[in-house]
Length: 272
Ligand code: SF4
Ligand code: SF4
Ligand code: SF4
Image (cartoon, rainbow, N blue to C red; front, side):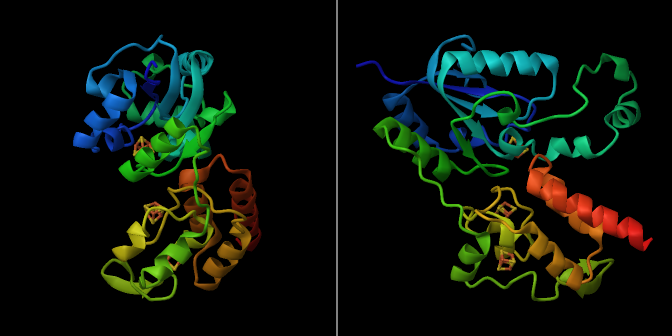
C-alpha cells in the first residue's frame, strides 16, 4: 500500500511552528518511514502542486496571492490542518487588523508602494474549510506526533479544551492572578493579567511555570467566559484598553473576544 502523502506549507509566519517537525530529530526519520513527506521547503522537499492526504499549513492569509494559494491547497489536500496560532486565529500579525495598516506600512517601509498585502490578515478558516486546528505559538512536537498518529490510524484526533488553570493548579504553580509580582519600572505593582481562565490547556502551563501570565496561544477553552475574566481584571486595577489589547493579542478573529473588547473600549470612552 502507498504511504500517505504529507505537505507542510508556509504563509505569513515566523517558521516557528514548522520547527516542531524538525525538532522531532530522529523521530522525523521514523515519521518519514511511515509517510511520504512530499512538500516541506524547510527540510528541502519542494512539490507544492502535488496532491496529498494531509496538508499542514503554517501562517495567516495576508495577500491576494495567499488567498488563491490556500484555495488551491484545499483542492489538492484530503485533510487540511492549521498549524499554530497564526493559521488558526491570525496570530500576532493580525494585530495590524486593530490598527491603521496603511499607516504602519508608511512608517515601516521606505517604499510602501511595493508591499502587496491585504488591509487585514486572517486565519485559514476565513477562506477554506479546515479539518483540524493545532494551537500554540509555537505548537509543540508532542501535539504533532499525537495528531499524525491519530490520522494514520484513521481515528479522530483528540484535543482537550479544558482550561489552562486546571493544568496550572495540578502542577501547583503560583497563580499570577493572585500573587503580586507584576513589575513595572522596578516597582512591584500587582498581579499579572493571565488569560489562563479562558485558554485551553495543553502547553503544560509553560508561562505560569516561569512566573509569567498566559497570553492565550493555545486557543480558547470550551465555554471561555471572557466577560467574567475582564470583570476580575478590572477588579485588580487593569483598565479597559489594557484588557482589550490582551484579549485580542492572539485572538483578534474570535467574535466573543471582539465583543468583549468593544464593550471595554466603549466603557472606557464613557469614563474619560
Ligand atoms: S503561531 Fe507563532 S510560532 Fe507559529 S508561525 Fe505563527 S508566530 Fe511563529
Ligand atoms: S493559568 Fe493563570 S490564572 Fe490560571 S491558575 Fe495559572 S496563573 Fe492563575
Ligand atoms: S501559558 Fe498560555 S501563552 Fe504560555 S504557552 Fe501556554 S497557552 Fe501559550
